Length: 263
Image 1: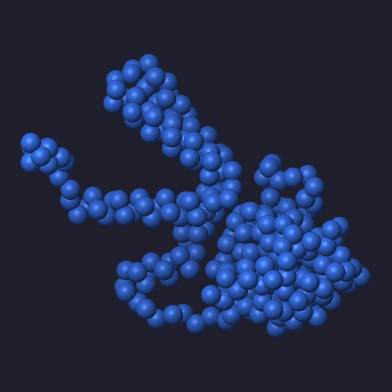
Image 2: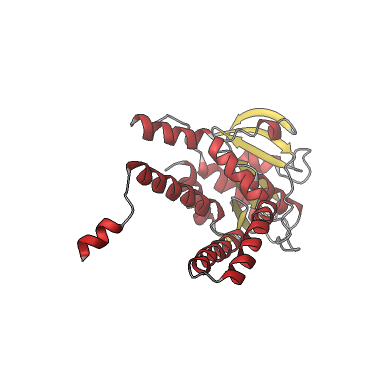
């Protein structure tokens, strides 16, 4: 009997194994992209509806099947509209150098590590700590694989080693460079007074000002990390993939930056 059941199962080919692996990788990166956002709950809800439609179709519940099929056909378009910023981030992730390098190493079995400049996180943390104590607003964007060249060109371009005193001077209220964002790339300050894209996410609390919205916006369209110092409260916040973590300590900021850039 067991042998008959085994023989009745569909044949499993190597291409089926590859198919499962690719789908698992796709879902992993989707989960990583949407983790911590409301979009993840919406996606899970849509997946549950899709599974339910398959079950009712198998049970030959015609009326419910037709309703769910219509919902799913319209829902695909709705998902594209709802997840337009997430889809854009996903496509940016696929085209980023870091993602391509991972697949090159996996396919060609390369174990050599690409040398890169480690981020001088201590200088950034020290500057943010001093700016926080003096209630001086600041916005620092740290690049990963996306170079943000177009964003850099919107500000005053220069190249300097990361220095806590320089960062504090840039964001001092009476200096011409304090308004806008500082862009850090390859462990160097590349530009100041840069203009960032403002997030259009309607779920952002009204209490967040333009600085926070800009910090969220740049992380929605790239893999960069934003560090914010609030002018009103003096609190330090970090933004990754559009998700804000408020009121972190200097130690937490140091740990976060080291994990993101120096691990």
